[in-house]
Length: 380
Image (cartoon, rainbow, N blue to C red; front, side):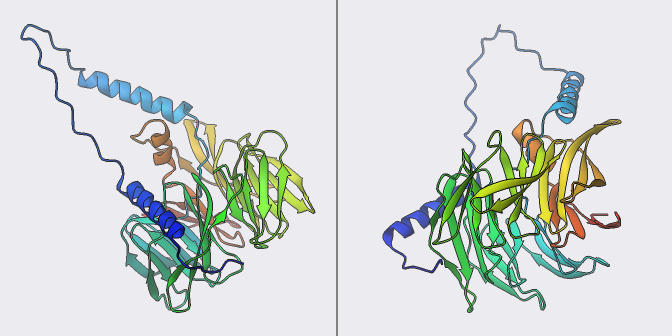
């Protein structure tokens, strides 16, 4: 069991380093001033400026090639900007934390925020929003807001609520094989818990299972452990290409998303990991699990070109499409283009899988998974 411990010198040094790195990540890199241009001889011909038509045409060709040809790699971490719970919808937008009723879309709370990062729900039903300079806890009934100290975050950090302890959560950074634990005390203070080293963690996928154990990827496969208890490793069939691990309805089961183009429903049986079902998926880029199965976003090619398709998949292998989204143009190139395209394409699901949401900082849609009806779209 994790418990708070005295803040020794090594602990302060580590927290200080993490805060310094987080501040650097939040502020970004400073641009270097433009270098002076070397003087040009009077009779040296200048390079002719490209015509506007030529530049526009080249940009259009590049945009078309990206949209139709460039592979979209799966999102490295869940977006964690939307929470669906007990008929309520929480959305961390570009400048506010918004809580509304799913039915009727009535707003219950709109709280202006600065530097929104990640959003989740804790075991006690309260919302936890991590921001650039502070953290917020919102009580689920009266929407009372408690302001907490800042939690260091990076571009690929993951927020992990504890499924067994009321106000405990963890943060994992892709570049650091360490589990950082936090707990909100009864008097509203944020306490830092003992650090836990993640042996062999390769930075790809991490989850806390419903039984309180942790599971993460390694270069050889998967490693599972309990805090202060035993650990076990699992080998995987084929390459170690898991990009997302998700819980399933049963305590002993879990979902693996594989880069080879399929999802695996697995079950922990003693010291072994057994594959219950292997279900194909076309170019998945994001996924989320619920007690009903999986919701995932994939890239489909049909008609005028590629687009996103929101699909539902249950443990028996039954699949159906719920909605489609355009593969919108974006100004970036390469990895930045992929990030921009996926920015408003994060997925969230209610625990029972009855509601599915797609969105991000500037877009939100909510679907009824049973009827296929779109319940909400904002902006309209």
